[in-house]
Length: 338
Ligand SMILES: [Zn+2]
Image (cartoon, rainbow, N blue to C red; front, top):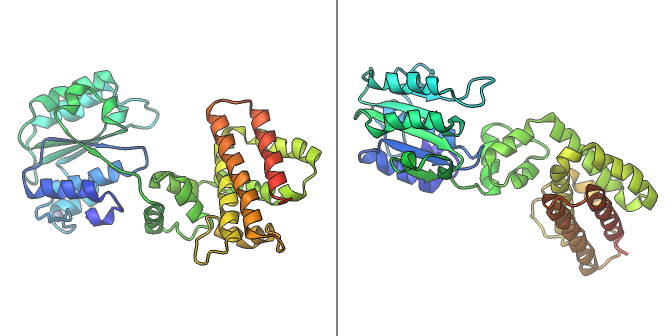
């Protein structure tokens, strides 16, 4: 394993490589949304800090230290994370696993590394950690992961180097999915798009059966829209929204991606990837042959705007029934291209 095994985050990896070549600081905070890869990158940095012959790309992967770490038995690496059923890391765990342990010399090399899920520390836990951070022995290095430095005590942040991980491009998210063998998933491109650049979100969606079912149902609903009767839509269609009310955001994501794909297909732009590539034939059937591309585009743009408006309405807590019914009627109207 090495830095290059991590997709994206070029800037942060550059800084870490630079730190390795010089003398690393005593504390680093890896910040960014959950699923962005904070822990993976912090683990790579830990491996490099402990490795007996690290290079610019991080740990060598073959020395005893690297092998111990990969086997989960490195004597100088400690990880402090939530245990099952815990909501916060108990302050006693911080005192024992860090405060006391800190003064035992490293056994294998010149360093000891502590990886800490700082989002799981309450103020008491953070204060206990602060004591260790204030006067650490020279061999200790602390790697913290956190949503944001703002969630931590200023006295912790001031003693650390703060690293901000950035959101990935859709093709980079696809590369992460490929590394997990999930890129062949029928909706891989969709997951990459709706993940908001957070690979963990795409991986979770790709592995969840509820989302698979919801997407299929939403696609069926969408394909039937143009031929649905108005009253039918307001009863059966609304029942679909109502039954999946907690997942309205995901339904709107799927609907938006389907309309977006129709726009791409209507422009017949060769080579443009569809988000819902597995639905290409069914989507093509929704585009009438005799219409001008400009007319199609006009209607589809209106349909897309309606999905965006519903998204805004959802965020503003607008009436759910009004929002769902209005959206269904607009989509039905625009998808008949009349
Ligand atoms: Zn090594």
